Amino acid sequence: MKAYLYQSYGSPEVLKQKEISVPVAGPKELLVKVYASTVTSGVTYVRRGIVPGSQLKTFLMRLVFGIRKPRRPILGYEFTGIVEAVGADTTLFKKGDAVYGTATGLKAGSYADYLVVPETWRWGVVSKKPPVLNFEQAAALPIGGMTALHILLKAKVNKGHKVLIYGASGSVGTYAVQIARYFGAEVTAVCSGSNLPLVLQLGAGKAIDYTKQNFNETGETFDIVMDAVGKINRRSCKAVLKKNGRFCSVRSLTEEKESYLCLLQEMIAAKSWFLLSTEHILSIS
Image 1: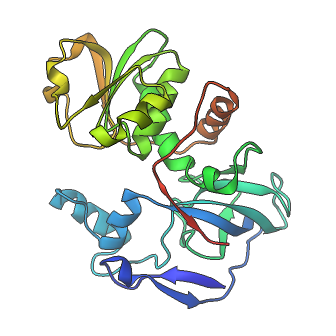
Image 2: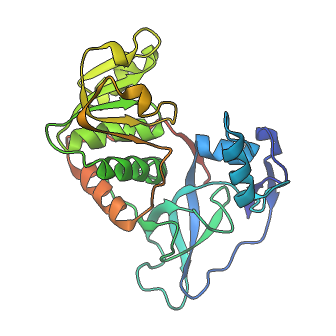
Image 3: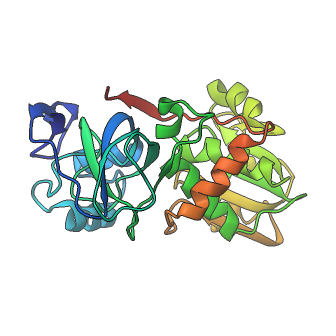
């Protein structure tokens, strides 16, 4: 099978297409023919071996992924495809199922023709693809969607809340705008001027171009301020947080859960939810 491997950290040129053996599914695993994956900021950080602006995070990332060179040669953390084969002890999936999910914590990523994933495991998730999504749409949903959902649920977003989302036009931000609206919140989005039409289309009631206006100077206060890009902190938001307001950020630890995917699928089925993403899709098939 074809796969994109990297043996050293660096620019996109370190990715090399090679022919390798098709992996074999174990007793409780699925062999998935990958149709699409994504290119996210997280993937580029791992490929480069650098977390911009943070020597500590770079060091911690290298501890996980390899100090001098990558331990896991195949990148790719999201996928969609068709189950090609199942292990003898699998019970939740069958050959021919359309599936999507994440490759978090696995030995090989999704930048390949085939990927082996367990039916269940601690770090990632796999689920049947919602029929209303095509393969490209489904590939871009899991990580950005689950990250935004986890953070907003932890912040206890609810109907009537005023929510400000900083970095609303990024992968996590676009989902956060839609999720907050789904729960009945009133959303103010902060992004660059070129993306104002996008965030308004996604459901934001107001949009602020951060290059022209400081969100701290609007005179409004919010129940929740969410940092969707890791560039602000609670102290910098003090002026716009209500007395018992909550600040939340992508810097916090998040989880990937089957229940999150199920809830996202319910949101997708709701006609009021748009489902757009700014992730780049990598077509495998």
